[in-house]
Amino acid sequence: MSTAVLVAQKISSKFLTDLGKFFLPLLVILTITGYGFNKSYWGYTIKRPSVFNEVKNTNEVLSITRLEKKFDERQFKILTDSISYKKYDYLPDLYYSNFERPYLVFENMPNRGNLWRYEEVANDKNLKLSISEVNKIQTLIINSSFLESPEEGYEERGNRYDIQIVEFVTSDESNTTIVPTNKSISQRKPSLEFEDKFLLVSMKSGELSNDHYPFYEFLIKDDKIIKKQKYFYDLAGIEGMEYSILAPIAEIAVLILSLIIFGIYKLIIKLRKTGYNNV
Image 1: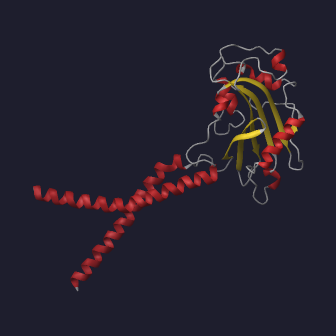
Image 2 (image 1 turned 180 degrees about the vertical axis):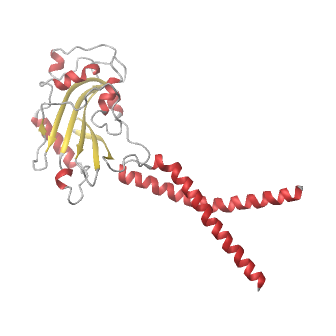
Image 3 (image 1 turned 45 degrees about the vertical axis):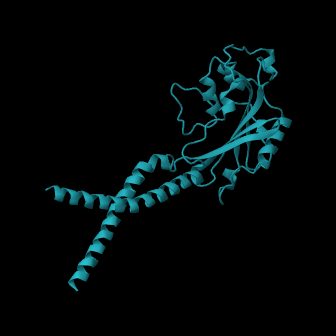
């Protein structure tokens, strides 16, 4: 009895070892291919890039300016309605949230500086960047060669942009002082001590290809782009079809495929041996 058990264990162990030699390379290839697709199509390997750390250290919001660039225009145009994020009684769908990203950070730190009043800053017509400042920013972004080109047939939609620029200052230490909207705020000057001043430029365009849209973020300091990132999302396309989500299903499918192919391979070997023995 013990001999039969040992033989069965040996056969089982050999089978699993041989299966592993076949399955693991396929799993590695699948993983590399899956994450490669993620990076190519969605713009990130595992998950979307978070907002820049500097945004998380915001102490005061100095201005919020919304702009647009139409397909047949060359310059960014400043808009009067300068806030895209509308408050609802429910959490917005984070998959489609883009311009809202810094506001969600601000709302998470309501007792820091004037962050709780970012909507007032956004709706104040005096707290806007000047045309000359916007032109400098546009030149920096265009010269960065970071914007994606649309596919053929999508030039009009892919070269149309909505832009949001948040001007803010940072401090590494939380400040619980509530800053009222006073004269210094209306002049885009910080009321509290701060370390650095930044511009967060968020941009999105129309479709680059069928149902496929880009979103860009640039961090500017002293008239230089110091950080930039982008990702893509789909509308009525294959949104949510990311490898990190599909990995368990894909790996099970590869395991089943491996068992089938490996079983066929073993069967062919066995039939060949049987044929040789009969000869």
